[in-house]
Amino acid sequence: MKIIGIAGSVVGSKTKTAMNYISEEISEKYPEADYSLIDLADYNVQFSDGRNYLDYEGDTAFVTKKVMEADAIVIGTPIFQASIPATLKNIFDLLPVNAFRDKVVSMLVTAGSSKHYLVAEQQLKPILGYMKAQIVQSYVFIEEKDFHRKEIINDDVLFRIKRLVEDTVILTETYTSIRKAKEEEYDF
Image (tube, rainbow, N blue to C red):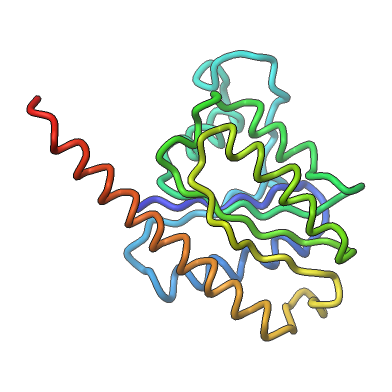
């Protein structure tokens, strides 16, 4: 099972910190999973200009191909100005409409205000649904008060991260087995 984590911003540290907790949980509980974290701050991704994702080169090609090859994706995003960052939206724009078909996608959101939980519901989930993702309905929402010195200090958040990883893996295994059973129905 290939799982990709995306830290969806080029600034700040909270989302990357939280995504590192995801990485640790997957490594500890699911060592057989092929997991890698793509921190968009480490890549020079071009803005989408409407080309097929396979026509891009360099970092843009690397990031989009990794996402397309994944069975599951954990999207980590901060909320800026009551919206997802342009760097994350650009990743969606670079990919085809059906990019997330047969993929499980889960979300981890960091924000400075409790009111920003609606961004995942009203912006991120509709984009993922449009792109045909199998969305893990419960996501992790982390406020600024849950961090101290680049560590998560809220035990409930840590529990929810563990549950998010578990739900992502179980849902991916379930959809994979359903897809395989469906494919075996055909005789060719």
